Image 1 (cartoon, helix red, strand yellow):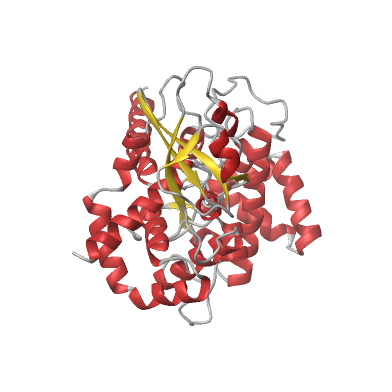
Image 2 (cartoon, rainbow, N blue to C red):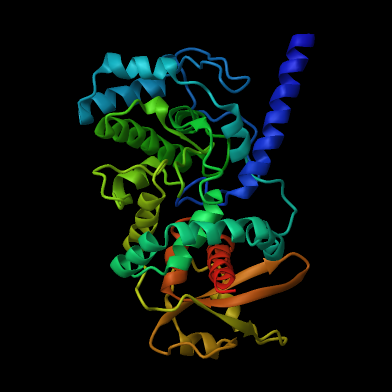
Length: 379
């Protein structure tokens, strides 16, 4: 009994520490929203296995080769990608269950209102600003080259890498193969469980394909509890689609090359709608008079700029600075708990940032951190 209690205390301590790390990085799960609703506590019917598997704490072997879904997945990898079944079975024998990933993926407790100012304070702080200045000074040439080649301002690239990993300081120590496999086949019980499992099964596939293409051991890949890798925290699928060799050494290495990270972030944004030279966002106010809240229809309309300036103005949205009239916008609401909500008109480039992490808070923190670092460099 004392041994069990000791292990439980150890697990709780690890979870507490990791939750702090999770708060420091806003984008551990790339390009996918995290559900905030309460999970169902009943086991999902689809979670059928050939045999039971131990999964009490991190690092235990889960006998993944005995799970029916894993066996079916191996069959598909063999048929579609030409892997040897025996090799994949050996990989999954070595794959460990990550209980921490399950716990950190569970929805936040209901009832806590969103608070943009509290969120912002975690990322626009002296540590990140000073580290951002040093990063920009060190990699000024690569940032300028990325800006010229892709049209993404250096401050936006700096903002993303700073929010993600504090410029390479917090890139994660989980084995990616362990994390994505655990989430692919035993995601916590949430309303979107099936779609999330499908996403992570795709990331298991991409992890194996990327490792084969790069000629590396899949277990050598380390990242976040959700499988995000390197300075920019790209998921394996994003590495295969959007990462670039920006330092010219004939390989892509987001773990050890900040220059590759710089080029890859810029390329990702362009591939997700970034338009060089266009603005990002404009502060706005909304009509709060009784019976004149037509602007409400623009809240929760997705991560896309699709409304004309005239439409928004007619509904009671007033930009504080006049934006270009020939562009489309979306209404961004940054809730502040019990304090008044902050509103912005987001242009297409703002929503390109949300494709990196599907959150208004995230995108605005990237913009604000980048701006703060640029300002600090000129002092």
